[in-house]
Image (cartoon, rainbow, N blue to C red):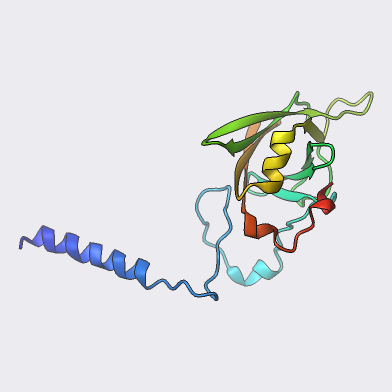
Length: 182
């Protein structure tokens, strides 16, 4: 066997060994999807102090925008078929009004992404809005009942476009009250 072929085989066997011996027991940690790229080197000892909120001030799911520069809170009301997004600060608590005509919710349905334009809910005399909503039965049903939900939220803040990832599987809702998000 040539030397190059032996190196290729050794690398292939090493990959199979690493993947095959990674363990898949119940105690294996699971990774959550991350919107950002890469993993910066940092000290994990302080991560207990750096808590990532998962629920917004209105009881909805938080979506990270950028490197936690902003958050969006996603709510869905099955009774009215309304999907609402609140644009929030880096801590995921305070509203951040933006002067946009819409934010775009993209949900993966029937093999393709479907866009839903959420329009601003403005109070009279305000220049921007931090709350955006759309009334859509298909969007609400997908958010509530999809076995494997995949989606994105596109938001422009200032001169920068942010894309937040929306993803969960049906088991992620076990023990979860949907009424809390209405």
